[in-house]
Length: 295
Image 1 (tube, rainbow, N blue to C red):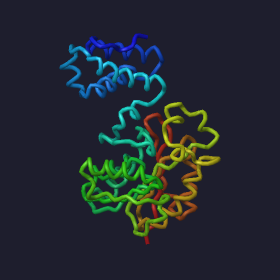
Image 2: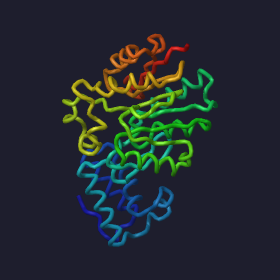
Image 3: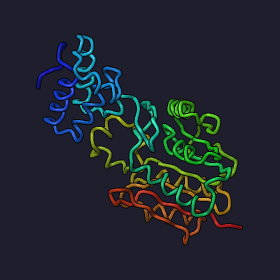
Image 4: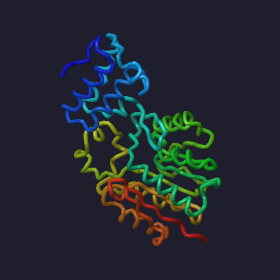
């Protein structure tokens, strides 16, 4: 397909890019084209509409063509932009963070519904997000819980810097702290809610993942060991020990893992009759919750 050249209008460039993406079978060619053209030209949607008749300069065209080639090579749009929206929040990404996915919002939804049910939405809660990455889950919760504070942990200093910067940029920096450790190993305080989206892909399945995930997300944020459950075996007992009586542990899980993760929660002393499993929009069980017994 034709490369982007100087002199074509912004509207024409968008259509050309979308056509190239559609010809390659990309899932959302129109949206990808809009995002990349906007990024290349530093224009939001309103700007793209208002300046659609403007002709591209040589530098504009070269910059856009570079982005298009990256997308055609399989790089996700979020990686190209360096940012991704999650729960309505704009989150910056880095090489050590997963691209936040809509499936993970199931954890946030379940947490907020649980807190609403027990009347804790306005309480001064302490939240821990184990393996926080970009800070997506923790910051989404803090954005909805104005009296809450939280700690995100990660073994990656790069990820923690990204999460810290996201907290600052979202105006949540005074309520979010970040600690370098594996899951909860450096935490000693008790928490009213613990959440996590740990690596859960069975190691043998990673080679079969979509290239956008396999080749661009950090491996250690994907690889859950032989059966995908290694991280749960480690973090669930740690989290159970740190929960306040009556507090909830909520974890994202992969396809077919909800029952095994629920069993690990009850083995760690959480209440079997408190287990809740919530499906994502595709109907796949995606979040598992269990509560610690009240004294």
